[in-house]
Length: 240
Length: 258
Picture (cartoon, one colour):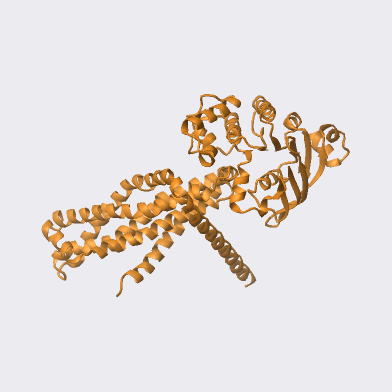
C-alpha cells in the first residue's frame, strides 16, 4: 500500500535520511523505532507530503505522491489521519470545530450531521460532551484524544501517529495505547506510528522498523527484534 | 575583507530565498481566490478583528493628530498666512498624508504583530502542518481572509480617522486659536476636493496589503519556538512600517504631479 523507496532528506548541511526503504501493507500496524532526533517524524511527514525529499519516492497505491498535482496531493491527504506529537489542536477553535474541520472542508454534510459524526468520534475516544471546550481547557491526555478524534473523523484509510504517548503519564499513555489498538480493530485502517517508547510500540505494533543513522537497520516482527544481535538495537532495547 | 564579502554573499542568498518564498506565497494567495466565497465567514471574522477592534486606538491617534496639526499650523501661520486657511491645511494634511500613514503604522503595530504571532505560533506548534495533513490549503484558510480584510478595512479605518482628525483640528481651531467653525469648514469646502480624500484611501489599500502580507509571510515562516515567533513578530512590524513609508513616497510621486 505504501512504499518508501530510497528516500534522502537533508536540512541544510544535516543529512537526516540517507536512503530509507520501507514497505507497508494494507491493514498492518507498523511502528518505526529510533532515538530522539533520528528522523522518525521527518519520515512520517514525508509520507503525507508535508516535507519533500531531496531524492527518492513515496508511493501510495502505485502513485508517487511527489508527482501528483497540488489538487491531487490535497485530495490524497484526505485518505490520511494524523496524530501529531504536540496534538496540534487549533487554539482558536473549540473541540467540535477542531474535530469537524475536515468534514466542513471536504463534505457537504449539514451542521446536524457534522455534530453527530463529531460526537460519535469523540465518544470513540472516550470524550463525550466536551464539544464546547477550547484546547487551553484540556489536559495533555485529553488533547491527544481530541487529536485522535480529529484524525479519524474523515474515516481515513491510513493513520499516522507521531510519538502518540510522549509527554503523558504512564496511565494516560496506556489509555492512548488501548485507544489505538481499539481504533485499529474497529476502523480496520493501516497504521504507522513513530515512537521511542518501547512499551507503547510493543503494545500497538504488528511489525517494527528501526531507524538509525538515516537508514532502516531492522524490519521485522517483535520476536525477531528482541532476538537481533545488532549492537545499536541491543543497546536501544536495553536502555528503554 | 573576506568576512565582509562572505556576509554580503550570505545576506544576498537569504534575500533571494526570502523573495522567492514570498512570491510563492503570493502565487498561492492568488490561486486561493478560487475559494473566496467559501471563506466569507473567515473574512468577516478577520474584518472584525482587524477593523472594528482597531477602531478605538485609531480614533484616539486621529483626534490628537488633527489637534496637533491645527495647533502647529496656527503657530506657523502667525503673521504670514491668514487663519482662514487653517481648515484647508488641516484637512489636506490629514486626508492626503497623516490619516493614511499614521493609521497604517498604528494598525501595523497592532494587527501586523498579532497576525505574525498567531500564524507563527500555529507554525511552530504544527497547527499549519495539521491543516495541510487534513487536505486544507493553509494559504486559502489563513492568509487570504487576512489579506482581503486588510485591503478592505484599512480604507474604512482611514475614513473614520479622517473624520475624527478633522473634528480634533476643528476643536483646537475654534476653542484655542479662536476662529469660527464656519471659517474652518468654509476653507475645506472651497479648496479640498474628492481627489484629496480618495488619494489617501487609495494609498491605504496598498498599506493594508503590506500589513497583512508582512504579518502572514513572517508568521508563516516562523521557526524555532517562542523565540522564533518573537522574531517573526518584530520582523513583520518593522518590515511593514518601512514598506509603508517607502510605498507612501512612491505612491505620492505617482498620484501627485508637482
